[in-house]
Image (cartoon, rainbow, N blue to C red; front, side, top):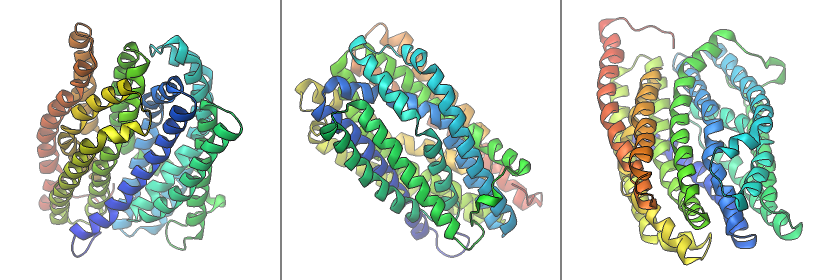
Amino acid sequence: MLEGSIGDKTLKFALPLAATGILQQLFNAADIAVVGRFVGKNAMAAVGSNAPLINLIISLFIGISIGANVVIASYTGQKNDKAVGRAVHTALTVAFISGVLLCLLCEALAEPILGLMSIPENVFDMSLLYFRVYLLGLPVILLYDFASAIFRSRGNTATPLICLTVSGVINVGLNLFFVLVLGMTVNGVALATAISNLVSSALLIFFLAKDEGAVHFSFKKLGVDKRIFIQMISIGIPAGIQGMVFSLSNLILQSAVNRLGEDVMAGSSAAFNIEIFCYYVLNSFGQACTTFIGQNYGANKPDRCKRVLKITFLQDMVFTIAIAGIILLTGRYLIALFNSDPDVIAVGRVRLKFILTAEFINVIIEILSGYMRGFGYSFVPAVVCMAGICGVRISWMYAVFMRHQSFSTLMMAYPISWAVTAIALCAAAVYVNKKKLGDFYSGGRSKTV
């Protein structure tokens, strides 16, 4: 990451990461498809209605894993192997303990939480059942996210992809076994997800234990380094808040979707599980930007930081527009894989149109947020996204949607909120660029994260 060409290296980093996200979503989509085909559209709606809530719950900790990524990348750039080792064990300890505590808390509050989401009565019981079983896998889900972040910080996105492929195949097999052979419903696909995540996290820990470099894992070294933990959360919590903002706004919009009935819930769920492929592509370049900036900032290389920004932005825009176009052209057939009901397909196509035609705006948000996080400057994009995305979507729902309750009206909240946020982030990035890179040229650059 610190020498030579940049473009080919960011592609080698981002594309396996995008493939990991897409593969993960394919396996998640398998949950929806199995219950949609073999249980019914109410079960499909029940599983789909959980997605925004689950994303909201784990977003904060995914953000902290990004903080771990930045810290480890920076120490790697500084060639401080001892600090890298301490950061690895701190990250994994925090991941598992947080997962256990989060699981216990959410299990206790599961019913009242779902009660706030306007889920129809004929779907609620299955939604609650899926949610409770899914929560059992939270400790290993967070462990996988943090372990993946450790590999990404070193430029290795292939190993998490391999582990996910193995666990994903297990997930699909268990989905079919639990539903078709044992006669389970939504609890079957939730249990399959938990077991497959256990496999993927165990594989990553195994590879870290086999590593002979700075990221070598040993159970004896598990513990929390207070200084490194503070560095991780100072970067990670704002990043997590930013992710929670996305998820919270989606959760609020999901409650509005739930008001429109089972067909809209099912169609929106199917479309979400398709459009998210495009998001994983654009997000992978944002993470590439964060990691490459983190290492080059740690190694005092400001000119490479600027080049990383330009190259990842152009690459992200090209790939995102291409993927969005392909999905739009094939959307009808992709949605039919989940459920062949014409009303469900019609709703899904409406969502794809609104989301994917504006997805290029999201590239600006992801790249600029990743750029600022790479410098350890995570608070600014979090605040901007909170105001621009969550604020605009909530305002739109209550000011516009409540007066004109149609699915199309609701979907307009996405491109409008993205546009407002992108403009604000451009201004914020100019400020951060002057502040952070100015330190290099003025001689005020510190060697700490």
